[in-house]
Image 1: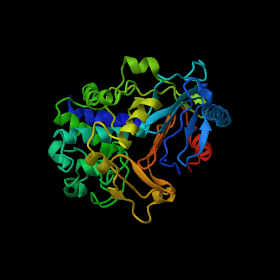
Image 2: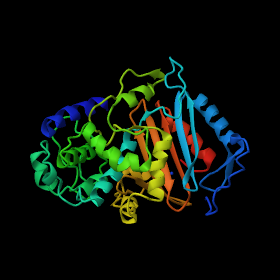
Image 3: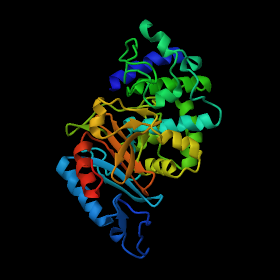
Image 4: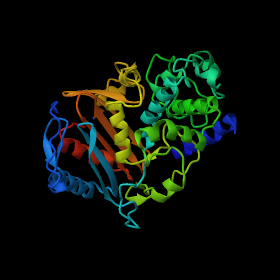
Length: 373
């Protein structure tokens, strides 16, 4: 994937120039009680102690061969559980701590969508203005040029542009008419980031990340969340692992990758989910727009096999027995991630790992928490 991202970055830089809890709140034990005996509520209302969850995670990580983990669980509109486990690198054995940062991979997209909504509320972005009016795309196949002119930021956030996930340096031919299908696309998200950077006259490197810090990170209290590489990230980032070996490749890009470049950890990302659950910095109308089914999956689309039915502006939607699960996954191969939350339940989950072992781990964890995979 990074090869494709590199090609995309090089290409764009030229034309930019430069997942049934009751309504009863979760029960807290006395502050004098040992932390390990405090309880956490699952989405179905089951109560488990911190010690039980810690023990389960350690056992499961060892079973699947996962080197490092950052995990957070939301109860009652707060981060009720935030733990780190394992090591940042299996060779150095340095322990993961609460500031260790992970590649968020595609978990970059939901928070970027929130960023776009913040800009829209301030009149700095029109979600329904044709993208070509912000920034003409230089690599659209001649057969798609007329339809391409219909693409808007809203379509990009809902994955209904017809763009491929990544173009791999090729000319882009739309898979369907804009607004009339589902095509998950990091390429389209990156196009929107480039357009925003151009429109705000800040480009799409550190200066655009600075806008993100002011509009999203600071208001939400995200101290360990950045889209572009910096000294702070370099001092705290875990090493990725694939096939039980550390990877040499490290995402240190200077470019703002809307669909892939976020570096963060579970507590920070859980704070973002709390904002989605009970917004303090974005209007209810904007949150509703993000969570509303903006793009219903076609009847025979393979993604329906997962139980998901459609996409909002940034999150996928999956009906569950106890409410609508809003979710997203991330996969940079040597870094993998997952999040979910429910608006009608005071529950959410965030998981980051520096390995390719997340699926096996999460299958076991979701069963333990009673929140089916």
